[in-house]
Amino acid sequence: MAITKEDIASVKGRGFLINRGTECFSGRLVSVGGLFTAEDLLAVSECAKKFGSGEVAFTSRLSAEIIGIPFEKIPEAEAFMAERGLYFGGTGAKVRPITACKGTTCIFGIIDTRALAKVIHDRFYVGMRGVALPHKFKISVGGCPNSCMKPSLNDVGIEGCRQGGVSLCRVYVGGTWGRTMQRMGTPLSTLYTAEEIPDVIEKVMLFYRENGKKKERLGALVDRVGIEALEAAIATDDLLLRRDAILAAPILE
Image (cartoon, rainbow, N blue to C red; front, side):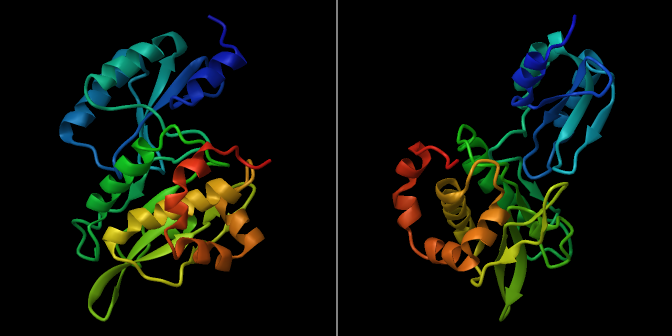
């Protein structure tokens, strides 16, 4: 069958990207902070053999990408993986899959990256899946200042650190490193506990949703309005109290 531009667009938001020079697609299976069980990987392998080319590539966002799925087999692949508790996705102007290093088991890990990534995944990637944002929104969790997951290159990056012997989190905002914009994330002036991080992320996201313009990355917004404006906004619970109104309003042009 001939694949149209409409066909390609119709499945992109579901996590399927056209393979260059073919009429087949790579389907991105989203992990929870990069963690797959042995049973998950068996299912990925079976799906790749059954519906794809038999090849799997792991992305920089820690998704498992099954290569070579024909367009007409995409619904079957989705149903097959859903029966096994795995889902395709990870594209669009919304929260992207959460990445995390192995800080939970690493000797250098200061915070439990796996547990925090799971909380963030459930609350934002799953819980706010239908929320449109001005642009993509990437979140990363790093267990220590070794910065293996490069949290400072994410829209919101969390990095475990110690102050006075206490395990805390440093938060970077506005990081990105791509074709059109390169910007190191700006560290917030406050350190937070792991328990405080989800609310901090939501405040930053709501500030972005209310003030960002279409196709404007968070870093560009921070440069436009100033980090002081963002920090002042997240210092109170005003954004959380106005959550429904912010999400109901149109994105600025």
